[in-house]
Length: 313
Ligand code: NAD
Image 1 (cartoon, helix red, strand yellow):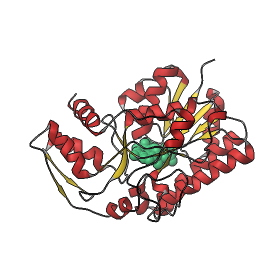
Image 2 (spheres, rainbow, N blue to C red; image 1 turned 90 degrees about the horizontal axis):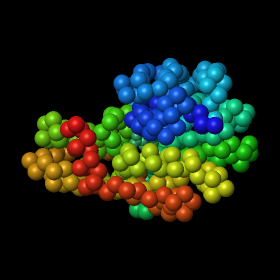
Image 3 (cartoon, rainbow, N blue to C red; image 1 turned 90 degrees about the vertical axis):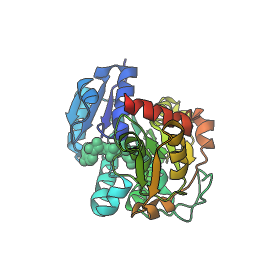
Image 4 (cartoon, rainbow, N blue to C red; image 1 turned 135 degrees about the vertical axis):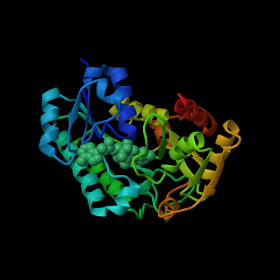
């Protein structure tokens, strides 16, 4: 029998590509997309879509029962930069939506759950380079506090109620098919759009701000691969560190200049700079390598070439 999947927050940066990848794998009708708003043409036309508020338990339960859903991916959230502007709304959305799906799994209405965490769980007191899986975590953003709390609850629901919840601490994600949704790493997507449109870009992070990043194809592959791993192989039920590539705005600009030599960049750090400064520069993901054979494929130059080719198309 085919696995029936529900994606909540399917119209966002990750949800869109994840939905399309899962539809390709499991069949269009077996992957139900849902969001509070409509999404891209490719998402809306390729399979079932339901308007759904992730904070409404009953509405999620109705869809889960109606479609006989096995697995849920909760991608709805308020991201780091936006949540700093609306702290209580960010906290409420990020926590209420997670409890809704954890409780569905606890009540055995779904069998497996994916919930994304973030490098935002770390803070200024965390070791900055090769940040270990288990380390000091004192996040300073509303978003980071919600993700750290979410991780604790995921582990608790797994230990206490046997909930099969799986999670990745995504680094900043870069894609050409969808736009980012208000995070601190958004510059690394905007820069490509502006390079092609204007030939120049003003970065809201300073030139030497190194952050862990990943091309979207790698992130989608990691997500599906983690969900397909035998439960017994998983030693982490809070959230797995996932490293990708680590680079600064200056290094990203240099990789674009290899393709577009006349491209120029300048820097005007804003309120997102202190958020970036509180996060790690690079991540140790050896536990993910060990437990589910994780390995990223895209380096900075392959990513730049793919981004520019994709946006030109
Ligand atoms: P996004 O902002 O692009 O998409 C989120 C989607 O959730 C949007 O389509 C939005 O309409 C929807 N949504 C918002 N409120 C909702 C509600 N009440 N009910 C239903 N849907 C609602 O975010 P994203 O970048 O795709 O991120 C997805 C997940 O991955 C989030 O949990 C985020 O914290 C995490 N994450 C993302 C990144 C990144 O770089 N994009 C990095 C680390 C972690």
